[in-house]
Image (cartoon, rainbow over all chains, first blue to last red; front, top):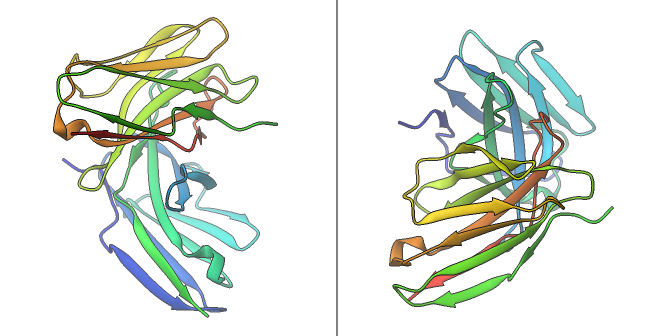
Length: 114
Length: 112
């Protein structure tokens, strides 16, 4: 049972435009959400996160939106740059004391065309 | 501040062998967790350690084990390797209770 879903395997956008990466989850116990970027032959790099008490978090070109009622979050990248081309993973963590295990989606490959 | 380091970066083993992977966390981070990445399953949680104690374990067979040392460095061991164990093994560290994990570059294990 996949608790974090990234239904689109890939996305291609023009440089300078907005990239919107979507993620859905099923576990209502998730209370913290993260986005990671991964280049080939490297480990995932933390990008941005959001707690379930908020509906938006912004960091530079990256903004994450959380819709708890729809169990949906999205990552917006504006403006998109060719260096943003990578695999993006959505991850979630449940409220469970000291347990901070992350559950990941399968990732989406973003290609930004010059 | 140095990032998470993992050794070795690449490893080739044959079925039935065992392997030990090593991880050094970011200085000050005492929580270390391990993940397996495969093309079909994405990133799957293996286990998490804090203060030399396993705090949580994922749904993997007992052939997968780990430990953490007093300096927070961690090792994971896979015994009786199977072809399906071929994967990228990622280590991540964090401050205790911080859900933001910082990953190392991974160890690419190939089982022949």
